[in-house]
Each structure stands twice: as structure tokens, then as C-alpha cells.
Length: 344
Image 1 (cartoon, helix red, strand yellow):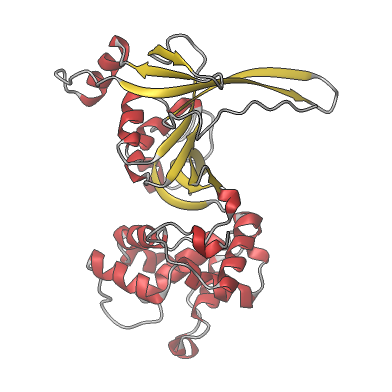
Image 2 (tube, one colour):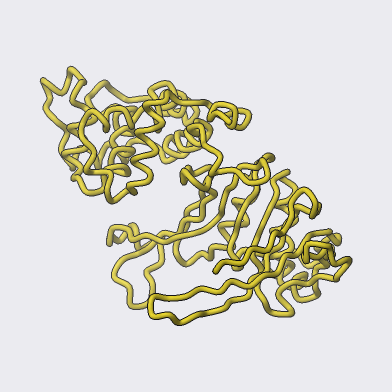
């Protein structure tokens, strides 16, 4: 099937040359992006956010430049995007690349790192947030490798990253025990295959992945199937994610109490239909977290449980067998079979 036929509704396709450039940059990873030459770099910026998108973001945030200068709000946004893309290059190099075609640069000179820092302080965070939100809708077309059962495969996961060791950062972000720098935690929903970020939440590393995920699952979309590791499952989070219309395939822990479910039926492919029932402990924890003692118990919900083992062999010839359990909203075992495969 052609790429264009696989683009979900509402996605804005990009030119083929831009798509290829962006795909190559993403596969290379942020640490490698600084090796791209200038012509390639020049084509990357409009793929991430074009001038119209940035202008609309500034308008939505109510930002108006106090006076004309090289470092307008729009140019500052471009430099911030560039700093994200080219992490190995200094602020001055990225600023020079972003402003090289601005006539005022010839008179006022290339902005210094200090000037860029001040300019970033003038642009509200809401502008960058709106640029990100708009840019997520302009996903490049994806191929068959990003689909399963006709559904776009997404994944939710988290990571942490170091921040500048300043008093301002330390006041808002936790520093891990024995750590040198304050850290931020990010949980994101990405498209598998091209690693396109569809939605993200960022907070202090002192905030759990689960807490950030609670605010993120509402961003899941119909026509997708979402993957998540075993640390993300709770019945409340599962119910809210399912309400978005997205399908889910989440790993769950192996412990007997980690999945409050009643067996309904064992299916011919070895999977099982189960009824999820919120346990007393889960209800108590949810009431405590929300501060609402009168929260009602969640209504039972039907799901499908697939259990399997994976045997791996390391370079030394030692084998390890692990047991996995995944829960899914795909209930029809004929349309979505849990195929067992054996490898030699």
C-alpha cells in the first residue's frame, strides 16, 4: 500500500524530500543531528514548524514583539528548535544558522548566546507548547512497519534528562539522591517505526511516570493501538485510555494481585477473556490520591489476556526464559489472533 494511503485522517502530509530528511535525522538520533550539513539543516526546520505555525502559536499565546529586532519571537522559536535538533553545536552556531538570511543580521550581527538567553525569557512558554501541539498534527506519512491489524502502533513510555544546575532549576526540579544535576521527567506517546512524538508531559523527576501518564492517556486517538510497559497499568488508567477510542496492548505484572480480573472464557488461540474488577485496594488508593472519599467503584470491564514465554540466548550460550502477560482491548481472537511462534 502506498504511504499516502496509510496516513490517518487529519494528518498533514509533507513533501517526499522533507520526509526522507526528517526520517534520516530521527533515526540518527539527537546526538548525531549536529553532523547534518547546512542544506539538510535548512530543510529540517520547516518540517518541524513552518512560519505560519509559529505565527499562529504566538497569536494563540497573545505574544507580540515589543519592538523589531533580529531576535523576534518567531526567530527565537526557530533557534530553540535548532538547539533541540543540534545538541552538539553551541548556541552561537545555531543562532547564526537560523538568522543567516535575516537582513538585520548584517547590521546588528549574529546574536550572542547571552542575547538568545534573554530572548527566550521574553517568549512565553505557551508559545513553544502551542508550536509542539500543532507540529504533532503534521506527522510525515508512515509505512506498513508502523501498523498492526490495520491500526497505527503507538507506545507510551518515560525518560529523565539532566537540566542546568541553577537555583531556578533546583527550585522546580528534583535532584536525584547522589545526583549532580536537577532532572526533568518526560512521558510521551510516540508512533512506533518513525518515533514521531504525538503528545508529551514534562515534570520534575520527583513526579512518577504514572502521574504524568494519568494526564497523557487522554491524548490517545482512535485508529491506533497503544503499547505500554507493565508499570503503567491501573484499572482507572486503563478505563480512561479505552474511552478515547484507541485500542490498547499493555503489559501487566505477573503477580496474582496485580491484575484484579475474573476469568470469563479461555479462547481457542490460548488467550482468555477476563472481566476487570476494581479491587478494594485499588479503590482505596484512587480515593486517597484524588482526595475524594466518595469516589464510586469503577464498573467492571471486559478485556483479553494473552500469556506467553520468551526464551533468549546470550552470546555465551546461556538461555533465559521469561513469562509475559499482556492485556488488550482487542477481544476478537479470530480477527486478532495471539499467534504462537517457535524459533530455532
